[in-house]
Length: 501
Ligand code: ADP
Image (cartoon, rainbow, N blue to C red; front, side):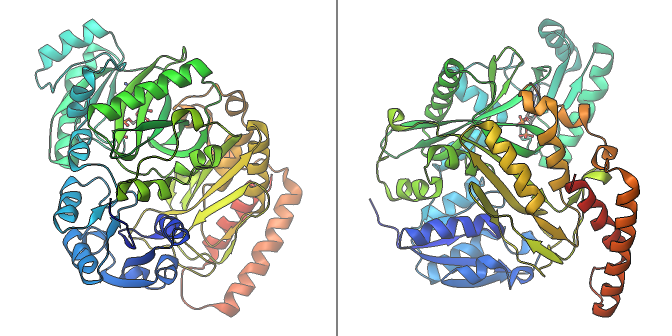
């Protein structure tokens, strides 16, 4: 056991702030690191001490493991929390931290290594009786062999890169005629994205739901599951709305999911917080996909329904303390939904829309949590992930959480950039979402940009014209040569139109 008194957060934005808030509540001193682009960022202002670690591009700042460890040593930091993204799943970094005599707030290095490779993960899990998608056991490069296996498991199949992440190197193959070409493409995509061309084959689960289980384990072998999160609303294989619990999972399936997740954690000697991801078919059969060895973006929905502060638990576990609760102590209290507010334009294929937050007013009130890292007037830096905030609504049941979220989205005022808020409201009102019977194809199946613009239109057009004219004149007098321009104003107006419906 070693008490942590000072913690460095090797991250930025909303997650750096979120971690430091919990650390502060525990009486810890906090250290922020930042790039030149983040000199005035909120996480820098919040921390007790803050050190610049380099230029704006993350390769020259937030990914500089050695530099971060040097700062930690100099400031006599006891522990480093990596947050998510950046160095959080870098086994080499975790190893260097520990070799420097600093506590890494995360799992053992070995577990990061095993779960970092999809094939190694499957290999580790196989002996534990966790359901897995039918497919090849190892990497495959021979097309004739691939055709044989695909015929056995039945089309459609999925070719996946072992080193894959973020949906890259993944290809659906509908029939044998497509196989050779798709396999070649997947291999070359995997080589260029990850420097590793190993691919394998899995049965493609049609109408799949993405269901994941939060686990916590201490260094004494105790493991608990904190129920599931439903993360099937995705664009470009990336999550955008998450909720807990899943609207379709039954108590029996929940228990089976939780127990399977614990087995996955055991297979690699896991401790700290982690997430086991599953794909689920429409009959609620679930199969292990992978394990993420870090805190997840969507962790707040689990916190909201369990009352557990996951970051505090991570810190306690890192100190060597045993878990202070058992599986039987954990209960689901209500329902929580998170929408990710990205600086992106849903009407333009969700492309990033970077700029200045000319207006930025957060929603408030009962059951609303906003985890963000920006204030009005700040620029969204082009160098990092374009997520502005996570908006979380909690209610006594799913219906209340949905209604609360719709109210909060309407209350949220953001101008200067396009965001995913209007899109999220569209989803929350859609009957497939309301029924719970949706899968990862939701966006492809139901969303077109026109769906965002259904205000009846005379009044809207008139109102819009007045608004644009007044904003333009305002802009003219305030002009300071930054990102505000006519196009932005018009697109803001369009967004407001979407959100206000
Ligand atoms: P990555 O690490 O690139 O994110 P994952 O293995 O986590 O890859 O898969 C990403 C997404 O692809 C999942 O959320 C799931 O929706 C979908 N997916 C993965 N494997 C399958 C499968 N066998 N069948 C259907 N969908 C799948």
